[in-house]
Image 1 (tube, rainbow, N blue to C red):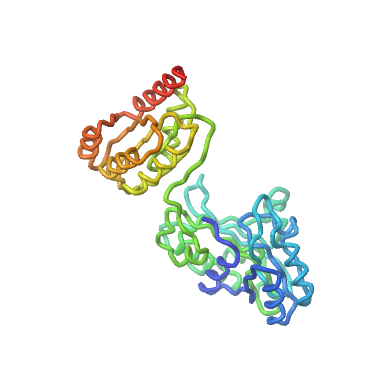
Image 2: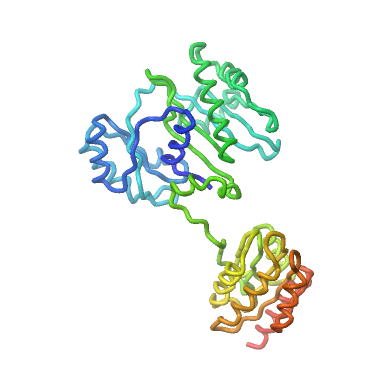
Length: 371
């Protein structure tokens, strides 16, 4: 999950990285009030979860409240790469002497964290990576060994920053890595990190947290008023609704449907710990989606219990307004009890995913032949 800049900056500041004074505005009027209260030139920044906002006109400067009103009105409501701007960060305009780039991410190929830094930061960092890759310093910390301040200072030295800045730069790099680890980040980035007369300041902030770790960071989630969806639902063009407990299992079930000549009507992931209520909710979605002729429910119970699945299926079918055939692959935790409940309700099931997928496609073909 990616967080807006204003939220990421709150986290960075909490962990000791200096940021500029800034406040969030949801209207031009709020932007004027904030600018007036701050009493300094400001930068008005669109808060979106995509890059390229500067080039798209989503970052503008205002020397006074009147200008703040004008640029806030221009930015609010605009679309940046398909994302509508709904709020702004009104921030003190920095006296920038130099810009740097700091980023920590996961290198999937190396299977460990990667620190990337450069003494040239800002909007052209992507071009720099293509034209002068040697200017981007890369360092792989050992994930099972503590990353120490002296390592961060050594990275700062390799950046070729002035000697008087090495200690301060190393401190920011070290703190950013602590944030990366503490908050289960996939990405923690400052671009640009700016040098001002007051020292190094994070002029921007990017933070992406692994979705499966969000339960450990409810304070972050609450900052976005974010409510995790019970299910992930995507409509497709076919007529066989595919439901699975986990994205990988759902995608595998879709592949099996395609392999047997069928077409998925949905991707519907109910997650690894789906309850009876979530099973019921998921089935109610697809049972009320007109193109669906057959439902293929693919459950390999781990945290999800097979008897909860059975209860949810039975309840959903009892409540359904239209008759839709369902094919179930049910195995795993409490499978005997779950299978018994389905048998008693007269609902057939399979243990093999391959057999269940073929059965779903064959049944769908029969229904279409009868039309």
